[in-house]
Structure formats: C-alpha cells, structure tokens
Length: 327
Ligand code: SAM
Ligand code: SF4
View 1 (cartoon, protein in one colour):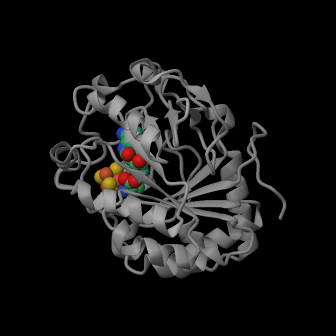
View 2 (tube, rainbow, N blue to C red):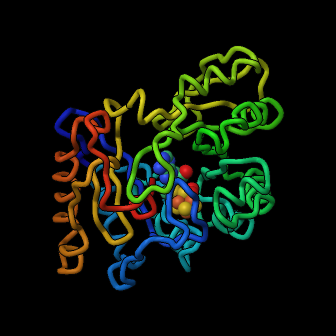
View 3 (cartoon, protein in one colour):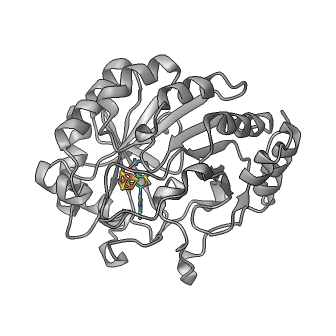
C-alpha cells in the first residue's frame, strides 16, 4: 500500500460505491415521481468488476467503503457482494447507506456477511408524511429495519434527515428528542442542489437554523465523532443516549477535510460529488487493465480532485441524479 492523496495533500482513504441507480422509493428531493432514465444493464458493473476495482483502490490505501445507490438493497445478490467486499485485504470499514425499507429482510445476513454498520435515511417520523416525502414508503417497515439493525449489531446506526422547509422542518425537535430516549445518532443534512431535483433550494434549512430550533431541548455539548466520522460535527444533549450531527455542505462546506472518491454503478470514478468531472474506469477495466493500471487510475483521479465545490458560484451538478452518484 502506498497511500492516496490529492494535490491539496488531503489523504484519500474512503470510497463511496454505488452499486445500482435503481431505487424502490422516489424521495421528492432526490428523484421525480416517474424515476430517472436508468443506465443500460450491460453498463452496470458486475460483482467481479466491482471487486477488481475495489481491490485496486485498496492497494492504493482506500480502507473504508460505503455501499450506496440508488437503493443498494434492491440489487440482487447484495449480501454476496458484501461478503466479497469484506474479504478484500485493506478494507477495514465496510458500511452501507439505505432507505431502510428492506433492512428488516437483510440486516442479519448483511451482518453475517461482514457489514459493519448502516446509515438509514429517514426524513419523517409521521407515517403519512413519510409516505408523501418518499411517495410510497412505509414508515413502520423502516423503523423495524432500524430496530433489527441495532439488534444484530450493525451499529452505530446513523439516521440521516434532510431538512426541508415547509415539509419536515417542524420535526427537528422530534428527531432531536429521539436522541434523548434512544441511542439514535441523528444527522441533520442541508438540502443540496443536484440533478433534476424536485424541490427548490427555497426549501433549504441551514444548519445554524436547525441548531437554533433544537434549543428547547437544552444545550448541545460537542462530543467525539460517531464511528466512521465523516463530514458531520457531533453533539449530545446532557444525559442523552444518542447524538446529534450536522452536515452542512451548502453553508459551511467541509471540502478542506474531504477524504473520498465516488464510484458510480457504471464504473465512473467521481472525485467530487458536487462537480461533474469523472474518470471512466469501466472501459479500461473491460479492456483487461491490470490491478496496477487500475490503481494508477485511482491515483490520477485523486489528483484531479478539486479543492472544493463551487455551489456559491452557481455551479450546480446537473448531468447526473443523486441516485446515480450515491449521495
Ligand atoms: N437510497 C439510499 C438512501 O436513501 O439512503 C442511498 C442513496 S441516497 C442518494 C444517499 C443519501 O443522499 C440519502 O441520505 C439522501 O437523503 C441523500 N440525498 C439525496 N438527495 C439529496 C439532496 N438533494 N440533498 C441532500 N441529500 C440528499
Ligand atoms: Fe431512493 Fe435514496 Fe434517492 Fe430516496 S434518497 S429516492 S431512497 S436513492
């Protein structure tokens, strides 16, 4: 292992791996009701191809892989894929982000296959509203999935909440309260402008406002990062079992500490979520590139990583949807 870093000396050790652009929900801030144009099935990387790429990345110093999508649990054979990824030398942290609908069905097998923990996206604790935001999701199934994830040890479970003005911002305190009673690690996320988004940026609620609106629950004390760290800053209410995290890609960006690359389901390596630039790894992979050659491509992609996003200059990624890039 040689260690990967970008041209701004940021160490790069984290790969977000989208394994499908398909999803069993249509969250209003992520996808139109009719869905997106899906990639051709033959362009989607096979499990063997994914493993070859991740092994090459691991040989360069990637140690953490997060499986995402689309909805990763809709990909047939996902448990087998987790099992294969878990055996790659050098990958010591394997986790997954899901909407939770199928978590009850797979949690036990995923744990047994080598998955460490899960993040679950959950934007409302009210069944009807949850259904409206996701367009048909069933809240009780997601809550069952979260409970089972705790039970089988896919912990700490992090709950991702995208806060939307006029849609779910009146639940900020309810989510905060969940951290008092349960060992929920709730992370409030600012709405990002992306792709053919269905809700406008006028719905953005900034992290500073979210913090302000949590104040009735008491003072927030800074605490150490919950396993996996990432871009969130973590806090705890006095005596709380769980934590509250804030992710502010729009108002207080954290690009200076960005440590990640993203691989789409079709093998495009994306150095920055919020910029269009990509490196096509599928072509060389299918043309028979060696592990060393693929590793070199990871190195070059890391060097292309921009210093930061340019949302403040109006540069918004439009070509792909969040379901293709994996969030
Ligand atoms: N389907 C899985 C899920 O929902 O957790 C994984 C993929 S989803 C694209 C990954 C994350 O991106 C989710 O937590 C989702 O809430 C978030 N996301 C999607 N669109 C977003 C947007 N415009 N702004 C902020 N977060 C967004
Ligand atoms: Fe699907 Fe996740 Fe996007 Fe919701 S946020 S539509 S669950 S990919």
